[in-house]
Amino acid sequence: MKAVLHKSRFAAILSFAALWLIAALALVSACSGREDSGADEPEKYVITAEVSDDYEITVADEAAEGEAVTFTVNVTNPDKYLCGATYNDIALSSENNTFSFYMPDKEVTLTAVLAGREEVLVAGPSDFVQFNSANSRNLTRDSGVVSLRLDISFDRIFNLSCQASSSDQSIIPDSAITITDYRPEGSISEVEAVIVQIDTSAVSQGIAWLEIDVRDSNASTIGGTIVVRIIVT
Image 1: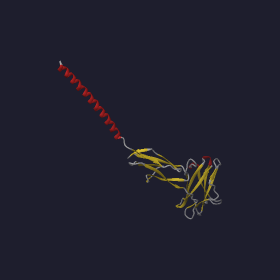
Image 2: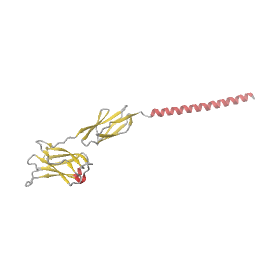
Image 3: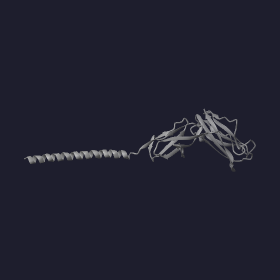
Image 4: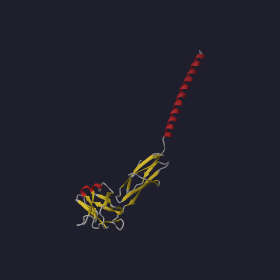
């Protein structure tokens, strides 16, 4: 009878020990799984965008090593333009003000590179094209069509190729600009000036820079680009 009792107790002890061992193994496995999960999580590094009154950078807050990072730069100062950008002083090239790089194994700082705009009122060989001094650089919205005159210094210019573009399409859209030749009275061929007309019903308040390229259609090397700052009120 005692032998049977001892065997029963021994079996119970073995059963308890087996259950304890299974529970311990399960706990170790769970802990190991959590550790493995943490090990698979790549370390991320902080991305800092330099703060400036002249521009704004839009980018993620952090990225892992080797991850592709893309950011955009919006220039807020109308008198400057974007030349490029850097991360940790490494130069980047852009496409439509968008930049990309691969995250290194450390934090990075992003900086935009700007340059100041400058007016060019006389351009081309022998001062080929000149911004007439009587022109006003100030426009008032809804004041009709405003004309700017660019004088041609060369004689016997019969055909011109002209293009105009605005630095800020929200202020002066290119669609608001038209260009015509001016030929003196009595002349049916020679061009004396270029007239740039701006429809003020299509503009908005602010500052925009106009680039007006004027060239001899028969000799493209003869020409120049006028750059002028326009204020719209």
